Length: 151
Image (cartoon, rainbow, N blue to C red; front, side, top):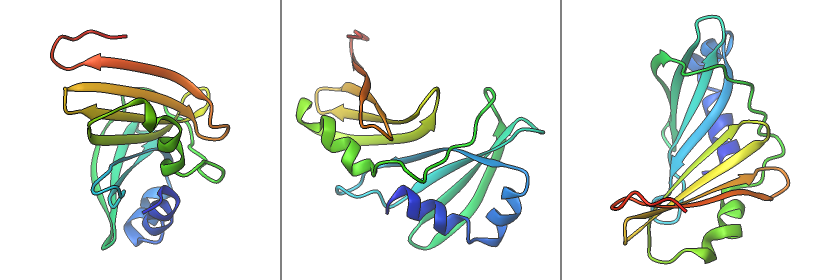
């Protein structure tokens, strides 16, 4: 499921529509399973209450999860022109071998970014921040989960 499809599906749900009266979409998260993104967690920020509410989306629909305190101020995430997550992954996946897990987050800092984390069989994490509009690789990191070395 594409992130845009996940947001569209969620925003047709009556509980999510009510939630959207006081919140803004601020980030989206998924884990790749069998080369597909089948479930998404969408995060909606309530500026007045300074909280984040999770919305879980899969092929069966959407449901509103827990509301938790926000860790900071969030800004509206406009997903209209973002590249598909698969396209972002293609930009960097040749740099990594033996991938066992792929985690992705779409969020906004100064720019709208795809943060892609590849976990390898050797327990290393390769993280990439990719501009979700221009496809530019902004940050590239490698960290060992065993020795805590960061490069």
